[in-house]
Amino acid sequence: MALAGLSVIAVAYGFARYGYGLFVPIFREKFGLSTEVVGIISSAGYVAYLSAMILTGFLVGRVGPRFPVVFGAMCAGTGMLLISVSQSPLVLVVGIILAGSSAGFCWSPFSDAVAMLVEESRRDRVLSAVSTGTTFGLIVAGPVVLLAGAGGGAGWRYAWAAFALAAMLSALWNFRLLPNEPYGKSDAGAGGGIAVPRVGWFLCRESAPLLGQAFSYGLVAAFYYTYAVDLVRRSGFEESWGPILWSLVGVAGVTGVFSGEVVSRFGLRRSLTACLSILSVAVVALTFSENFRVLVAICALTFGAAYMPVSAFLIIWSGRVFHKNPSAGFSGVLFCLALGSIAGPAILGAVAGTLDLRSAFWCAAALTAFSIALRPK
Image (cartoon, rainbow, N blue to C red; front, side):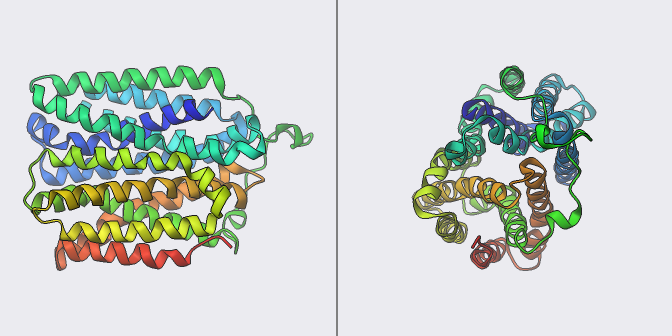
């Protein structure tokens, strides 16, 4: 379960969602995309992601975890295949949007799948491993971008075709493994199926810190992934430092695999506090990296080591708050995270335009530090 989930998250997030940003220089050159169009395409991908997430919250309670996960993986595979063969901007955009939607389908159903198939004492560990799939996707994607760029010509097309193949194989694996009936079906009563939770079920005193933390986490992370490479480039580094930065974040993010063990040993509250503290330092330290390669590498490694476990902490925390309907609850958490992801680049980007990019990174670090107040009891 852990490996199958890790594989589909690596595909949906590491390739389908973040791959676009890594290949933007190539897409800009091949298809004549302006900076404004690049931003519009990115926003469209987030809208698709958000829409898929909302749909998944309703699907899982009716058809079980298998369908949304497999459908999401196939969206990733089909979208990335379209990217690999695209000859026009329209086909490219369709592929990017379709691939970007996959992340919204693939993650939250594992809350139900793990609750159904894994014994309670191991659930936190399995969920931690699944949520860390992004880091393994980034570890692979970074070197692939460097190789595709060095090869020139059609190298980028072969890279996306390979990503598409990985998505289809992951879809097959999860189709064979995941349950195809809703969580708690046997307890649903004669009416059959699980009742759709009301808004009040999501928005309560116990869930408020969790949803607020998810929004803050999404806001800061989206800002970082949008502008970190730009900041490093403005500090005098070569273009190759973009994929290098992502690969270092991915390598350090392997720490997320051990999030379940950390929570078991130190508790969720202390673990989350420590990671958010480290994350705020890593974000602000990047502003001092001008012509200092070692500091850039340290910042990337520190960011990845603290960033990836937080995503695992969110799914563990969500499982405790929304234990009666795990996937529906986690879909609500991911919805707040997605809202933050949409708001982050716009709000902090405006700060960067009014002041400067370094000031925006200071604001992001401060927001991360303040978000420590949003912790489980």
